[in-house]
Image (tube, rainbow, N blue to C red; front, side, top):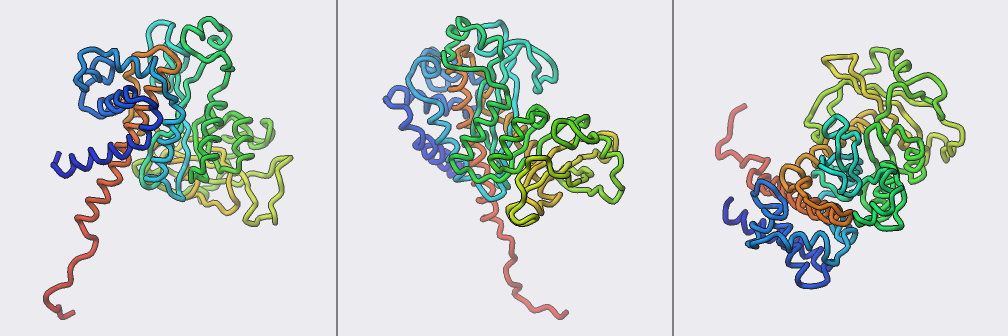
Length: 398
């Protein structure tokens, strides 16, 4: 690392931590939180208590563990600062909110929320915790801004087990979609610049979740099973049946954008009829009118490989716009992968509910710092490589 780059990294990290320092009321937790953050960014193999302590020059991990389990600070307040930081540096009119979940494999049955359940990360049922994450993606970059630990009904129904894991007594069962809706509400209420959101079938197949988004008037591109029907309450023909009748000229080859690494697919878009109870456009087809579409992604090499999306947004939305939103899901997946590989999102050694949220919050903060640093690095490279050439010193005869 060049000396000026190293100085820039230190200044950037100081600026970020300055935003959240006031959330740690006393000097001790404030210093420990900064040491934890620096350790997450350090080139150590495992970002657990022992190695984070060694990176901070501490002989034992007790202080790192106390930061997660005992010291007084509120992770939601830090996440509010994290969200503002991401919006300031990555925010834009093209912003998309992305809901995704990931599994954290665990042994035993003491860690909050752990049980045998399906993990999309592993692609199978395994003993794990399940985290639901909210990412913000724009042309500038992508970062995680919120997260919730999913607590199965078997946990909520066992108050003694919840108490041992530090789960607040007032906690009630919430589905993954409920957790996602709460995070989206926090982002929208805070003024995060995003007109669209996207998620996989877990959320797209939840009718109440879709209704919540429509009530909030945020556009969505949600993956849904092909077996679902085009009408409310599973009425009308199925999505896969409708798709089979699509004329060849309906398919367009469109890139899902830089977020999806420029991957090319064939896409088709069909307007769906209004559902009973939909508010009419004011005027019909005018600026305030919203409608639904079916968006289908087809793999070029295998036309039988289809992914279906139920979409909702302002009238006049184009297929290119919907494809761009759908492509933001890959950016969120990459966020989670990078947060695990680079800042130890899944390296924690805590069992308690609040300990999980605290580690995840600090890891998201570290990852956001890297995402913002990447934006500044791109700008610096662009400044050093002007897009225009200097005027020629000679005149050519053309």
